[in-house]
Image 1 (cartoon, rainbow, N blue to C red):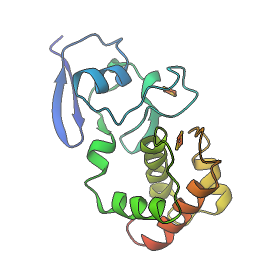
Image 2: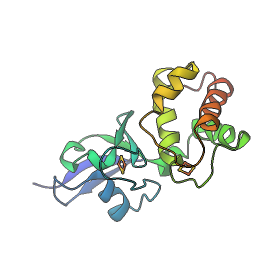
Image 3: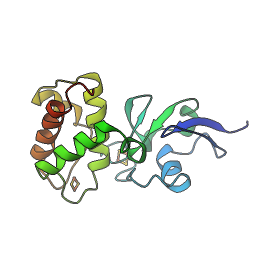
Length: 157
Ligand code: FES
Ligand code: FES
């Protein structure tokens, strides 16, 4: 086998390790994408969220063998987009960030939600973020931030 080829934040890469390795570990340890956080390693917290071909995944539950040919986006790549800046501004406006540990995953969950539903209701937002846990904020500010971003970024998603 000549490695696992995939796109990471727009750049083609080849991973030479085992197909059984976790995407989470590979992103953090090999490619230094440290925005991808390790919370539980059991698919429960969403801190390790990434986009794979535009779909939100818990990278702790993805084996590298499943990544072949995929386009993986982490916060290191997403932060270069205009949509990120809309979300960043909205999160700042309503003070939706406390310790920040959950925020990369939350923002990617918001991106996944708004990409498939650009005009979400509050219930849609809560559902879209339901796989991402936050120990600090009580969620309301984050939900408000995503709602504001959907309005202020109308047309970007
Ligand atoms: S570290 Fe992957 S879901 Fe918690
Ligand atoms: S801001 Fe601390 S876990 Fe969400």
